[in-house]
Length: 509
Image (cartoon, rainbow, N blue to C red; front, side, top):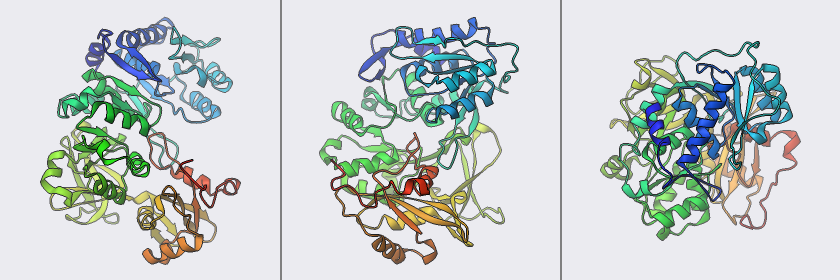
């Protein structure tokens, strides 16, 4: 990994490394910023083995910081950027790191105080400054303080996406990062179309978790210019398609719905042979509607930080062979992974076609089997179908309800574009399902009675949501997965009065 990054940082300035906010950042700029950070850490006396915290944001100085520390083999611990100043300060205090790197704007009084109390060197990044890396005034590294020691293996503590709660930190060694993100990458190995590699890579998934690094590192290794954004932009995605006319591209699952809602003309996407997506589940009805309208196959995958990346992949070859027969499958096992389905009660392996808990064994992590909380089915042809999460089941007075089942039923209503279902605590039943609903543009808002009647036509009575809210947009994590804590927050008494029960007259205005 160090060699790959060192080669990248040695490139000249002919082609931009990054484009951010309409400004090009060349490789000499990235290298200078990376060198400035590593020099600052060395000057402060912070030993190479001591991990450094990073409040990662999708900005050029952070790309440089990540690359510089990986090149030098310095371990990192990610700190979630999209939280309150008090929460960032609490993480700094709890982690007890020798140094923490954050955007200069994220060094709030609370964060500075936490760093001072922990004897942590506070380093500010500012991509717009002449010198993008600098110590925060009044901050220093104290050897008198007990700091966190070296990791077992040099690497990064990556954050999970925060779909069901506070993001967790999981270690990933640099050796594993190199093998999975670069060695297996279709971008690096040339197994994607040449025109797709000429188009700039659209990076919008957060650097703080595995999906963001899976976007950054292969494109850095391949020398591809990256268009860096802090969140997905449909307008930017469309502009890349119109300008470069690639044969294939990526799109987040939430972006598939955005394309449909925006009514993007079919001729605009006529260059695309297929679209790849991942990092979150894709609603099968949305996928079907997209493929019906545009005639472009969507190829999905399945993976997790716990596996070191994707373990299944739907390839163009598989899709051409099986057509739409497996259209909503996440593909077959990938990169030597083994998959099996077990009974949730007995933990015995189930035959093909049965739904149960998924277990994964991947060569990246050795011979052990990893038991997941995901429900899945593997058919006789070896294709995996994701069926939701067992730990997301809602227990309504003893009745188990899978949120995905309710969402699928709600989306059969012609006015509903997307929905999210969560379990709201209930004193009598333990939990009750509640549904946040996003409408199609210009759709007439259905009444609560209509929604209940629709749900009853397609679901058991126990599965009918106890409450419905119509919102302009579903709450999502930075990686564009639906945020279950965010959905539940919509239903708290303090916020429920602020939510519209009918949409504005024109959601496009």
